[in-house]
Image (spheres, rainbow, N blue to C red):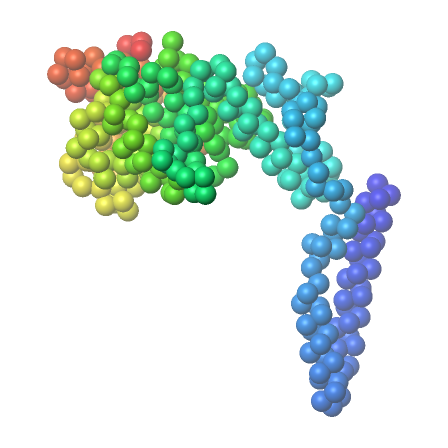
Length: 351
């Protein structure tokens, strides 16, 4: 408390000094050319003073551990991030008077979380990391994806997961959920486990992965789950590869997708295909699978059973796989799936 008061006193003193400078400047402005030159010099000096920098002088070094254990956190058996000693959830305001330092600490932990999820994708989900572009030289910028060993040769099914934009990385829906909730709600791992038993813009990335991987797979049924901006990326893929996508993709589950068929200039034939083969689980206060009105003439919109954008993929998880199952049965019987029922609730068979 004393340190905090001392810090405030120092800032207050600095502000008083600034006010004094301004008073002096006001007095100098009444003088001749020399005084005006001094006034200009003082203005230049003051323009370089950053109050944020003044507040940083008592800030601890921005040096953080590079392991979860170093942060004194672990994931428990429920996949929840907990403090090793206290068992408490993650605390953002570790230092209440240092918001910038807390934010940097949170970001440092987030990078460790990303590496941890990558390890889970490889060890628990048995996915392999594939570098993109596939023919990149050592000097070229590279990205990567994770895929199963049989992704291109499995004749039955292929599931493609596309996350949103921002700080999230491969295998994640929302970093905040991983840290504050658990691994199940924040990562794509439940989808991956259920299914099996950055180059340029996200849109370019999706097209590249389609051309070099998905289009070459032997799967009879290809499914997409695309969250947030991932939905926009999928729609752009359809625009660029319409015939191929229609021929290979059985169903698409969007979760709070931010696509817009008008802004993306989506043609009539694509809109018609989306109405029959896609469903968008959106953030809503309505119960899961309740029909939600839309001004866009594309796919049906139903409630994900939550008003939190980042939770939509997790909350709609059971409904998504039921939707896929219905699509496969409809395809095999040459009848298109009908997502909506008279009760405004979706009903599917188990996937």
